[in-house]
Image (cartoon, rainbow, N blue to C red; front, side, top):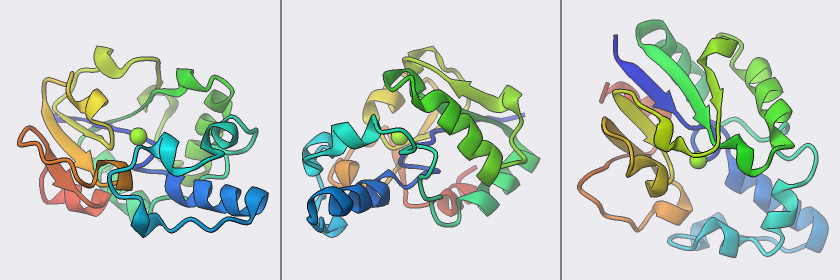
Length: 170
Ligand SMILES: [Mg+2]
């Protein structure tokens, strides 16, 4: 059975919308996501680093549109693993686990891998928004469109704009 590796932030969870909301709350500044193409996430949001370290940031992330139904389908047909590099922000580990339990209750604990580097990950298909994660993966690499990667053209990746897009590739 095909082993499908799916990233959380920027694929299942809409980090950009959360960062826009938090920025607006703290500074009143409204950042237009459409203007962020090609800009690294860390540079796009002046207070981003502070916000991702804030308690509740990961627990309250909006679910990426259409991702629940798509992942339920993938889960029924393939071997699905959710792989997230949670060690960068250790406080988020519990929040990520609780977030998954709330929004994706069909995913069991055995399918959740909260890790450091994703270099250790093997499988048939990886869906991620960061080239640094895809580049070390030996299987099929699907880059999930997010503003920071929008301008990247790389024939090693297949570009997807939603998890629904993935269904026609698997
Ligand atoms: Mg990601």
